[in-house]
Every structure is written in structure tokens, then in C-alpha cells.
Amino acid sequence: KKMRRPWKNNDNVNVSLKYFVSLFFLFQKPTNKIFKNSIIMENQEFTPAPQPVKYAGFWLRFVAILIDGIIISFVESVIIIFFMLIMFIISASHYSLNSVSNYPFNEECFSDYFNQSIIMGLFMVIGLMFLGAFFISIKWLYYALMESSKHQATIGKLALGLKVTDMNGQRISFARATGRYFGKIISGMILLIGYIMAGFTEKKQALHDIMANCLVVKR
View 1: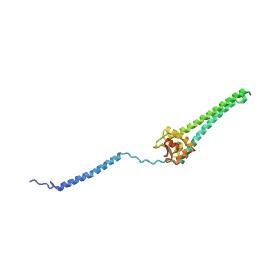
View 2: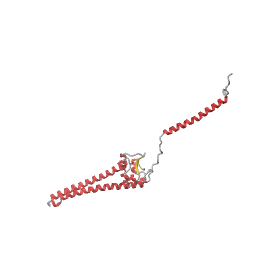
View 3: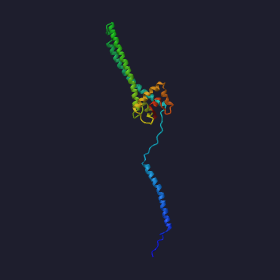
View 4: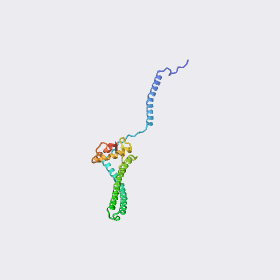
């Protein structure tokens, strides 16, 4: 007779095997889930939390305007001195060549000398008007070019750690910087109230900032 194996048809062995298999699959599922989650987390890029925006207050902006004003005034003074020197040389040469002593004392010659003096005066007036337009262009290009550049600030704002952005914190265009600059004219026309608004508005915006949808923030 063949020997019967003691574990054959043994209910206790079958129950133990079933229990072991069920435990194996029970612990395998959360392990796989944790492994999959770790792979997903490794593949995801780390994005730091956005930092809160720090708006530049009235006094910081006021000091920045002073610094820019000193720089622009110095450049304008140099140009004015150079212009006046040229005008003085031209006027001196004109009056030395066409002085009254060189003319005989009669009405016709005096009238000719007077007409030349009027032309010279008109030339000086036109020169001063051109100089004024040139100064406006210098200020406009200084602010518009620098605030729309990669620095996003004039020299005064750079010195104080400030920059100009749009409402989303991005760099502004040259056209928007131009609109912001000429909006300062309106801010100044209403007794400088447009500038003072930077001290009490929610996002520290002056009137020209609101008109151009811009912000002045700390770096």
C-alpha cells in the first residue's frame, strides 16, 4: 500500500496557505501605491511658493524722484551752459561786425542794423524753444527707456531697490512707460495730489500708476 502523506487533504494547511496569500496581497497594494506616489513626486518639478508683493511707499518714491531730479538737472545744466556759450559767441561776433559805429549816422543804416538785431533775437527765441523741447525729450526717454528696460527702474529707483511692473509683476513695455511718464503731468497739475495718492491707496499707486496700470514695488 502506498503511504498517505500527512498533509494531503489537510484542512489546517489549506487555511494557513489561504491566510498567508491574503496577507501577502493585503500588504502588497499599499506598498505599490506608496512606490507609485514616490515616483510621481520625483518627476514633479518643485515650485516655490510665491512671495508676497511689497509695494513702495510714498517716501521711498519721493527720495527716488529727488535722485533722478538731481541727475537730470545736472545734465540739463551742462547743456544750457554749452548752449549759452554758443549764443554768446554768435551774438558777440554779430555785434562786433555790425556795430552802430561802423554805420554812417543815417536812418537807412540804422534801420538795417535794427532789423538784423530783431532777426538775431528771433533766432535766440527759436533756439530756446528747441532747447525746451529737447529737455522734455530727455526726461521722457530717460524714464520710459529705463523703466521698460531689463532693470525696470531709473537710477533713483535702482538705488533704493525699487522697480516698475504691470499689475501681474511683469516688465512693462515702452509704450506703457511713455503713458506713465506723461500721466505725471496730470498728477502734477492737480496740486501734486496725484503723487500724494501713493501714500494712501491700497497698492501705493500714484494717479499716473493707476492710469497706466502699473505698480512700483520693492525688489
